[in-house]
Length: 462
Ligand code: ADP
Image (cartoon, rainbow, N blue to C red; front, side):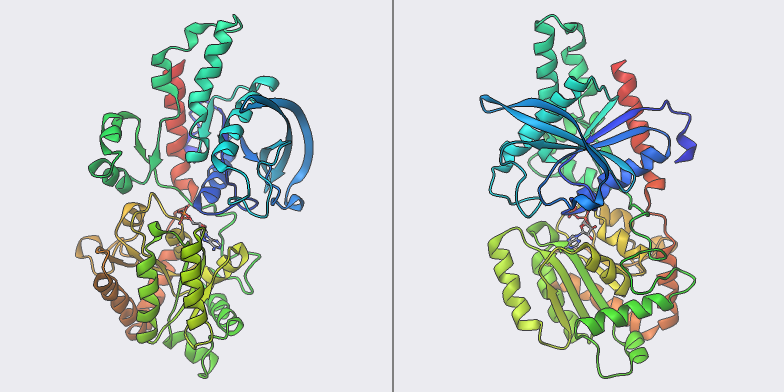
């Protein structure tokens, strides 16, 4: 990112419902932490505003202190609210804690409060806090639907201020809203094209093309580094894969997947496929279920680590877990576990990502960094980062196995190719593993594009 330091230094505030590792459910948590860390390291002032969920492990926050008490509006009343400040893996975080029941419960999502209400409250409370404390970031980066109301509230609050004579209404013109609100959706380049070509939002997106950008996410290499990862029983890097073999052995033993073959034999003959995902329709559930059967038929092992927010899906997978978990080749772990996810990426020969659509996708990038060869559906960010071994046009980039259809036959083809490669060419396979571990999907590569975008937005407003 250092080549972007000709830009002016900015104050960037991320407003978000997730942050890795203390409040992470999916990729959003990783993205916020990784992008914040990369921007900080280029010299920008960065902070993250996060609801103070009851489930956040306080011991992971350093120098936690109450900094402000203020009121924020919700549904006809002003709610006494506290703002705390602390550091999470060296990144400054402002925690917003209302005195009502919002954000209470054992998990980030799915508490007994109304989520829409709670996040509208949070979005507004962040703005109130900025006002009370006189904090004026250059950029407010809002993430996902939870905070999407913030830009509208921002201009509304600004307008009210103008009416009261506090602030020049000159500043709140429609032009300014148009040019500076954070309608700068960012997704992977392929996902951007896909969403403009079809789907119910396509016409809106096409007419706002000038504000719609395709920037790939990166992975936070401070969190995802197999050479230093504290969660791994053995560390490894591209030049020495012995630790990876140990991780595979350790994980398979722990889950009762080790076969009667000698340990070393098993490492080279039986591929281990992992799939780590939120269990929601977007992620290609029917293909995940089909893959279990197929992997078993092909003589491999498969581990699924996933959590289903939907009760019916949860029950379906519980049924499958009961069916398979005592068997010799499949394990279905229905939970969220950061620690297990690290171990599984490290243990895996292949990482499976069969999404129906994918704005970016981190699982394939993390998998590659940990030496797991990706088997993915060609969509969105997966199409931007994984290139098929047999694609003659992309031999240089070839780094995985790609299928296009959403049917089971397409998937079967890709799995068959991957398994043949693994079994027939151990040396070639090792070379792919080394190659993918050295691909740079870190934020070093892409944070600069966000910084440029921030600068151009800032220039528009000034
Ligand atoms: P999405 O943001 O749609 O969930 P991504 O692929 O962008 O998908 O990011 C998923 C992130 O969440 C990855 O870091 C992945 O390892 C993690 N993850 C998903 N499910 C689990 C789980 N059950 N346990 C631990 N980590 C998970």
